[in-house]
Image (cartoon, rainbow, N blue to C red; front, side, top):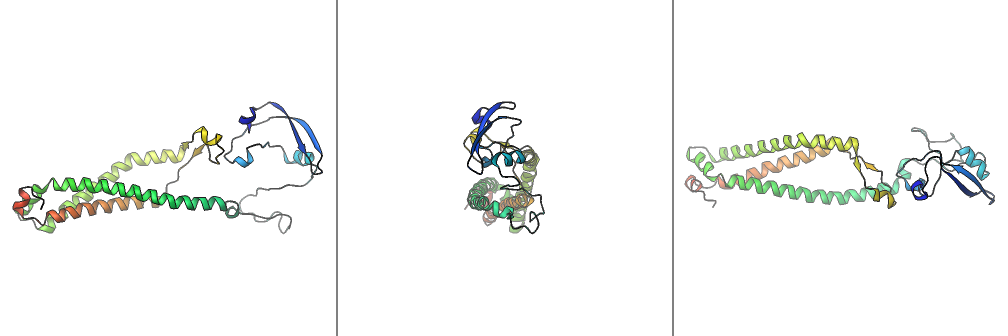
Length: 246
């Protein structure tokens, strides 16, 4: 409102209003403070004045439309039929519906990211294991059983997965913590476009998300380390030593 009307603290302006009886009146007003809010309905085209002064201007003594209550109160005043209490579930019903819809879309996007990550892990592990066919053939020629070879290379892949998780956590956790504390600055075009979005967004990360993603990626690393090793271990030691894959 202040930006669109080019108003600053201390500026004078003339306002006009119509009271409860339909009578128009006007007065000069001075801007005492400019505050920022992400709720456009209380910002766009709105000015804020003391409730007692507003009741006097509109000729409605003792009247109000909305009253914000502190947490825990459900009736104002207790037992009065003049006020209707609405909780957050009622007031944010439309927003909650939008959030549920966005979560469904985000789950699809998250599935695509998981598929890309699993594909990258699979390609890397398969290439690494197939390049070490001769090493596997040497181990089998020295008397190591097929399942011991499979267990050895699967364990190696699992340890590499744990190392990747630790290295990713070293730089990922501080970065995510920084975002949660200081937020993500939104462009000014968002505010000018009338979107009900705060100037900063503060991401929230739960331990369930971290554990779920870590567990899925670790299990995938173990699986893609096991499958190619099992296939190569079926070769005869002489074929593996020659570097053959079939």
